[in-house]
Image (cartoon, rainbow, N blue to C red):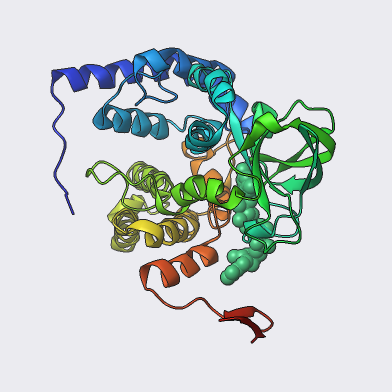
Length: 404
Ligand SMILES: Cc1cc2nc3c(=O)[nH]c(=O)nc-3n(C[C@H](O)[C@H](O)[C@H](O)COP(=O)(O)OP(=O)(O)OC[C@H]3O[C@@H](n4cnc5c(N)ncnc54)[C@H](O)[C@@H]3O)c2cc1C
């Protein structure tokens, strides 16, 4: 593991200054206010400004609409945006889908969309989860039936985050119900303005806005199919693996584990709690920081953040989520009722950061795969344990099918 510090030369320092100036212009208090009000984790002006800089796909060459940034500059950009809580969920989902569009969209469609994505005019969301269950994506029931050069889509997706701000959803649909479940699926880039698509908001306890999306006899041209008919699972694997295992950079700059930004959020709140402990006076005249028990608990919280950040791969994903869930509750317990006051309430601390983190933390154990699903991934892909056999599950043995 490489713990060395990256030295910033003059060029890199100038890049940091450029990013901070950009942030001061585009990630304003109004943007945060909009985010608290809508929970959409998206701001059009910011997204378009990122596009104008080539920072939506920053590693792409300038001719393609990117900024030709090297890994170090990409990482600086990513961390600076994260540090100020820039609303970027739609940026992330768009980037996840991009590689599948590049690889599988028919050349005309790819040529049309990729430059628009880089500019910020076209955005993608993820249409995987259905009301009957999201962990088993391959069990999707949303149906697509071929009709000449078109497909007719009927079904319902839930938790399609960002659908209200995107032009297309990366939709998994069942195209052959008679094939084994992983083999009868096809991926589409479904235009969200097609007649028959209805987007209905859901608001989470964490203040996030996500959606139910209904598809009623929606006609989509075969042009929007990504990859082979009934070969959707192979198309989905790339974006799904990136969510489960990361982008695969092994350059000492990337996070070791998935979801490390959640641990950094907790790290910022530990810093906020230290500020509280240094600046508050208790009735006995002492500051909380003068109390060895408070110091020990703050130290433990800081250590948990470091341990979470140092936990690699899918193990890190479980660790960071638990660190945020347990750690945000621990900070509220340490500080007391004032930490429960939301942003804007009289007497709230640090702009309501403790209340927000505690509510936001709960979803981190769910989206992008639950922590239970990640434990399965660790068991099978890291530890090499066999797949669990549930009662009623089918076991394939040569030339035969047995029910265990
Ligand atoms: C705020 C938010 C945003 C989201 N954004 C998106 C999005 O943009 N696009 C999208 O498609 N989805 C999105 N999701 C959905 C998310 O990916 C699913 O909620 C998640 O995968 C779990 O699916 P589920 O809720 O249907 O639970 P289920 O799959 O029904 O699981 C229910 C419970 O059973 C457990 N479980 C299920 N299978 C197993 C197993 N094999 N082993 C052990 N335990 C198991 C789960 O851990 C969970 O506790 C979002 C969810 C939330 C809350």
